Length: 418
Image (cartoon, rainbow, N blue to C red; front, side, top):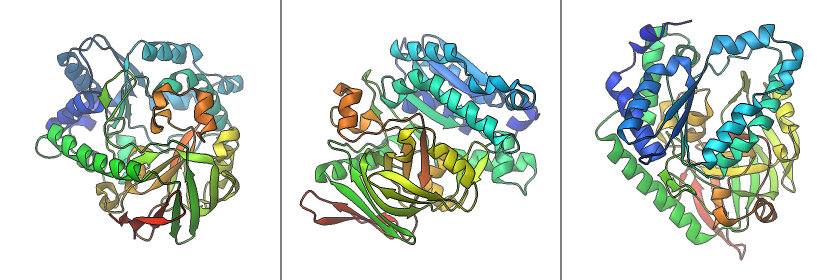
């Protein structure tokens, strides 16, 4: 395993500190007295420590870190008893759900090797993933419903860097990935807090325009794509900063380039192909092609990773339906970088995308007051999964369909028409 001190030498400490400050002040909007639960790969300790410092400077109550380790994860798959792959740490997730219900903020640092499990038994990977998803559900509900303020950021681990830049030495790869993360996270120049205020204002203009039009559906056309996505009754577009139920404004994802809302899970028709590969638990799923009838995927293919894709689709009833639709221009900084990050936090911000599985209650008018039954009645989807995959490109056109059936251009050739 790479020594943390050696790996950190390729990472600009000033920009790393800016990222930590942005995570606390912009990502979380952490309030004085508020506790913080933080999860991260152990290799990300340099960033974890800076986040803790900025959190306490902002008046945090208690910062509790939970660290993971790639070697320990692999040890489970290589030496763990077979029955263990149908189990998960329920007690931990129950504790996390309790913490979130008591106004603890949530921050996740991602950075593990995206292909870590590529050589492991796919059946064990699928079983462990399902068990973990079921155990995590009480905590996940608090997050997807925005009960508390939360944020995800990234750290350039050596194993991840070598996936993105396989032809470079490890230290060069780490430096390149760090620079790409800093640029996408808008901490590479000037006043990072002001950078985010300006960016959030642009995203808010987009959501206000879309919410003002109240589209009934979106119609996508492009190579291999002829898709109509009905939008949930009473849907609301979100993007950039938004308020959690505890009244705190947060940016859940850093970076973010998307505006997104909830599709109607029973009103999706047609076919669509992926525009970028999906990296999912050690498998690269490429050239996804699916067909929807009455909101449900009835046919799914992929040139690579098809077996894993179909296992995902069989997770539960909601796994074949959509829980999110997001608009991202082809000119987004992440798209223009030309990089495949093998990480959804970044890759989803390179292209317009859709997500299989669980919807966000936040993306409804007065969503905080709606019950799960009301959300379902308005077209919101329920599932153990939420997996984004990219369908937008420079050749994608999108029209908004109004209640009277007339159309308004939304995207032309991958860019905002307005």
